[in-house]
Length: 597
Image (cartoon, rainbow, N blue to C red; front, side, top):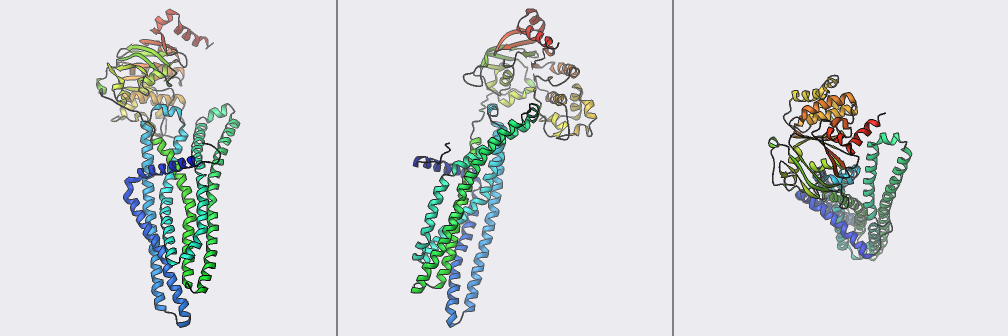
C-alpha cells in the first residue's frame, strides 16, 4: 500500500468497501450471540431516548419558573417535572449500565471463541505455513489483534449505538422544538462532519499498517529472544538493536500518523460545538426578543446542541476504534481463512495390525514447484528392518521423514505402508504408526513424568521408570528434589543431552510399530551414546526403523544404508558392503575420522 495520502474516488471506494466487508465478517462471526447483542442494542436505545426526552421536560420547568416570576411559581408542578427528569436520567443510567454488562460478556465470549478457533486452526494448518511465517506474528494475531476486537465489542460498539441514537434523537427534537435554531445550529456541525469524514478516510491505511508492523515487531522480538545465545556469541547486539530500532520506528510512524490524523477530529468537533452554542445563544436571543419562543426553548436547545455535538464528536474516536477493529479483524480472519490441510482418507489401519512394510515408489518432491529435492526415489523396506539414511547436508534426508509422516505429500509417485498408499490413510493414523525422536528437543512446562508420557493414555509409573532406565536417565531423576514429579520450568536446568534422553524415553513410551530417529544422539557424549544405542537396539527389535545420522559410526549395524546425494540414492547396502565399494559412503565415513585428528 502506498505511503502517500490516498487519492482518487475508486481507491477510496475500494477502501470503504473493504472496511465494511471486514466489519460485516466480524458481525457474521458474532451472530451466535445475536440475542445478547439485540438486548444490548434495545437497552442502549431506550436509555438514550430517555436522555433525549429529558431536556424537553427541563424546558417546561424553565418556562414554569420564568412565568412564575410575575404570577407566582407553581412549586407542585415543578416538583412533578423534576421527579420525572430525575426518573429519566436514573433509568437512562441503569439501562446503559445493563447494556455495558451485556456487551462485556459478549466481548469476552467472542474473544474466547476467536482464540479457540485460532488454536484449532493452528493444528489444521500445513507445516509449510509455519516454515514461511514467524511465530511472533501468529502470536500477535492471537493476543494483540483479538484484544483490540474484544475492546471494541465491549466498549466502542455500545457507545456507537448510544451516540447514533443520541445524534438522530437530539436532531429530531431540535427540529420539533424550533426549525430556525436547528438549521443555525447544525450548519457548523455538518461542516465538521465533512472534515471528519475526509480525515478518517485517510487514516485507515495507517491503522492497517500499524497492526501489520506490530506483528512483524513481535515476530522479530520472539526470534531474537529464542536465539539470544547466538546473538551474544556473535557480538550481534548492535546489529540486532539497529534492526529492532528500524522496525520500531516504522511502527512508531504508522502509530502516530493513525492516532494523530484520527485525533484531529475530536478538537475539531469541540470547536464546532462551541460555535453551535454561540449560534444558539445569538439566534435564540433574537427570537425571544421577537416573542417567537420562550426562554425555556433556549435552555432545552443548549442541552440538545450539547447532546448533538457530543454525539457527532464521539463518532470520530468511535470510528477510529472501529478502524482499529477492522484492521485487527482483517488479520484475524485472514489467518482463520488460510487453506487447511485436506485430509481425505478412505482407510484406517489399526495400530496393532501394522506390520511395518514401507515402499517409496518413484517419489518426486519439492517444497517449491520449481525446486525438486527428492528425485525418482524408490526403496522397498521390509518389516522390522533398520534403515539408515545418510548423506551430506541438503541431500533430502529429513525431507524423506517429512514425507513419511505426511507433513507434506509427494508431488508424484507414492509411499505405501503395508501396501496401502499413505494418501489413502488419515494423517493421524499415519503418525500414530511412528514414534519419533528429532535432533531439536522440545519439552513442555510440566513434570518430568508428564513430558515423558505426553499424550499417551494408560501409562503406568513402572513403564515410565523402565523407559528411563533403558536410556540411563533414572538415576539422575532420583537425585531431583521431587523425582519424576519435578516441574520443568525456568528454574530447572537440564543439559542438552538430558533433554534428548527425555525425548527418547518419550518415544519408548509411545511404543509405536515404527521408529524414526533424526540425529537422536547428536547432543550426548560418547558414553551416553553407547547406552542409548544399546537401548535403541532393544527398542528396534521387531520394528521398522528409519535412522538419519551424521555420525556414521552409530549405524554400522543397520540392515540397509541408503546414501543420498542431491535427492537421489547413489549407493545402498550394509556398512561392510559399502566400505568395500570405496565409493561415496566410504568417503563420508573416512572423512569423519580424518577430521578427528
